[in-house]
Image (cartoon, rainbow, N blue to C red; front, side, top):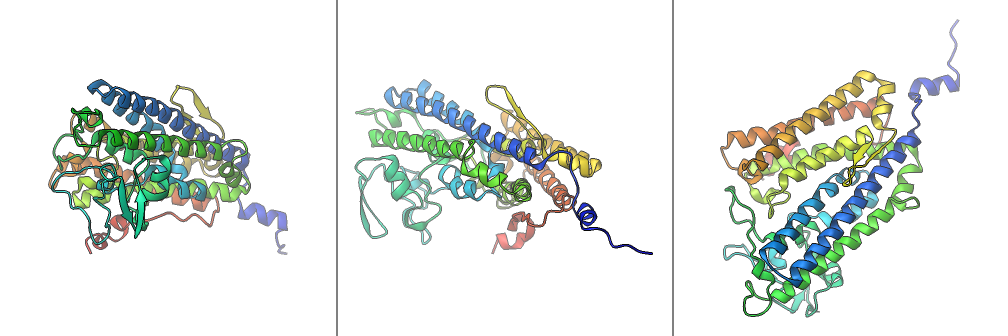
Length: 418
C-alpha cells in the first residue's frame, strides 16, 4: 500500500534542512559589507587628508603621498563590489563612486591626439577646469566655483551620457595621475605636481581650479561612502532588505558572487580588454593599478563564500557562511567551491605578482603577447569555472531567482566587433 507523503515530509524532501541558520549567514554577510564600506570610508578619509596636503603644499612628496593614499583606498573598496549585484540599493549607488571608463576631457586638459567631442558625447572635451562658464544640454552653467554639488548634479553623466564620469575613484585617479599615454608600453600617467602649483609655476593652466575640483571630488567620495556605511549599519536599508527574507537574501549573495565572477570581471573587465587589445579597457587605467583591482574583486567573492573579511587594521570579521550551508547539503560541492576560489585567487595573484615585478597589466593586453594573454586568461578561466560551481550551488540550495549577468565577450564574442 502506498502512502502520499505528509506536507511536512514533502517540505523536507523539497528543501534542504540546515543546522546553520540562514539568518546567521545573512548577518555575517551584512557585517562583512558594513566592515568593508567602513574600511573604504576610513581610507577615503585618509585620501582626503592627503589631497588637502597636496593642494596646500604641492610637491613631488605630497603628490606621491596622495597617490599612495588613493591606491590604499582601492583595496577595501574592491572587496565590496561583490555586494553590488543582487542588492539594488548598492547597484543604484555604485555609479557614484566607481563608474568607468570615463571621457577625461570633460574635466581637464588632455593630449593633443585626444579624440574630443564625438557623436556619442558632445562634452568629451568640455574641460570644466579651464572653463568657468559652459553650456550643457542647452542650459548655461555657472561653473565659476567647483563644488561637490556642481560635480554631482550637473557634470556627472552630463546630458545623460554615461561616459561623462565626473565623480568617484576614477575621476580622482585621473586628477592625480593624468592620462596614461603609453598605450601597451610600460608606464602610468605622469601628471606633474606643478599642475597644483598656483602662480607663475603652474603647469596645465588653472591650477587653483584643478585643486578645487580634486578637493570637491574627494569630499564627494567621502560623503558617498558615508551613505553606504549607514545603509549596512544596524538599522540601515541595505541590511534590512537583505535580511528580511532569508531565501531572497541568500539569492542576493549568490547573484553577487556569480555576476561579479562571470559577466563583470571575467567578461567586461578582463576578456573584453584582451579581445580588443585595448589599455583603455583597464579598470584603473591612469594609475596602472588594474592588477590590484582584479585581485581584490576576486578576494571579495571569496570573502562572501567563506564568511570572513580581514579588515585594514588586521582584525577579522567572520561568522556563519555560505560555505557552512553548502557543506551541510553537499560536502563535496563545498570542497569544489573552495578549490575553485583558491585556483582563481592563485591566477589573479599571478597577475598581481607579474605587474608588481614590472610587467604592467596594460602591457599584458598588447597584441601577440603570449605571456600576458596566458596570465589574463588564467584569471578569466578561473572565474568562469567558479561561476559554474556557483550555479551548482544554486541548484543544490533549491533557489530559483539567481540571475547571473553575462557578457558578449564570453557569450557572443562576434558581437564585440559588430
